[in-house]
Image 1: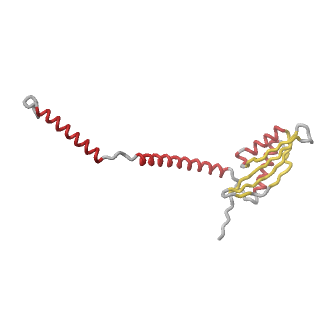
Image 2 (image 1 turned 30 degrees about the horizontal axis):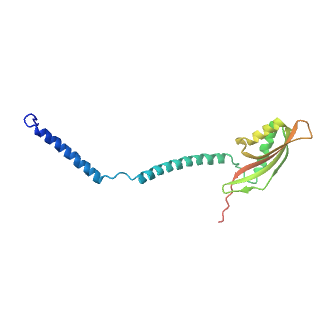
Image 3 (image 1 turned 120 degrees about the vertical axis):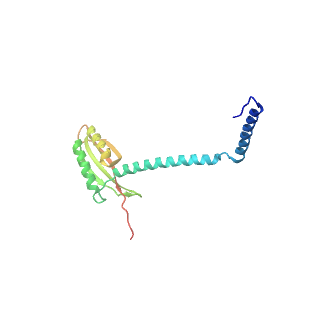
Length: 178
């Protein structure tokens, strides 16, 4: 132990030694330590941000793809007309409207989906026809309404005739060339 009463300069020497060590350490740190590159930090931050966005988009894509699958008909293109007609007939009966006409048009294909358009004509009271339209538009019906034209009917007072453009979606049929 150092007795500072006998040698008061020893305290000053100790303090000077500590100051010299701190000064040498500071100079060494300034010479050998490089601050992080701002561009590198920005790239790392951008990469983390982009990665988070990609994961978010992939999750949304998965939920969207599941929603598309739920809205597709499982019947093949040969049986879709009968299935849609059966679905519309049940909806017409439950809504007390008369299905006056039904026809299909040429299907349109895209990369993943096949769109099969139909035209249906229904007659009935306006509230019943609108209830029928709501049933057709419901997600459980797997049909999309792309046209609704309502006109008054001459046959009966308070009755309307509605022409509905309907689209059913099927998974696109993959053709192989083996």
